[in-house]
Length: 265
Image (cartoon, rainbow, N blue to C red; front, top):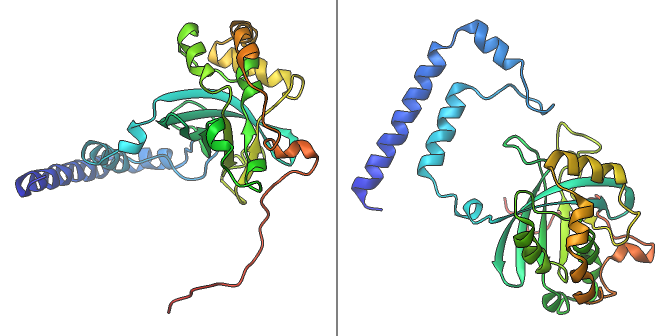
């Protein structure tokens, strides 16, 4: 971008800032007080002001959002905490298919603009999984059951196209960290990241969760399952090193204090 373009962008942004200030200045105190008492989904803090919204519009218009714009797949499924299968969470994945062997996903608790960002998942092919160190493999979970059972869906996609996309995930493996334990504290992301896993057999996932998901997203897990019968026969076996929780000893993070290294004054 040349100097003239930079100057124009700055002037444009400053104009938006000026407009935001004008909007804020015109708000009466009664309206401001009412807005300040609102919050979104129990998250602490007042509703966004007119100035904040104008600033966001300016940033959206002028800044680069390439990593977010690269997201090209929406998947809905379920996770459980690696050390507690009773703690089950619905997960809305927004993913970027970076290479044929690698996806990276951000995970939300919903599919609305104010949904909570609760975690991340990396997905790799079986070929890449086989190259991992032995102590790394138990941290990853298989996707064979999730995909063939109909638990994992792509809302809004015609079933024939969805089938093709899901087929590419059957023999993949995911490593998932949830940074917000929404089942314990919905207001704030307290605590440390937790390793999550995927279900591997029928009967593990609470049927009520499936029914509620299907109702909200207008999908049918039984229909999805029936449409994927061919994937069951063509899928390979899950590699035994994955799904580390199945040994009865689950990997999980705990918080501990360590001596500080490399400190600079």
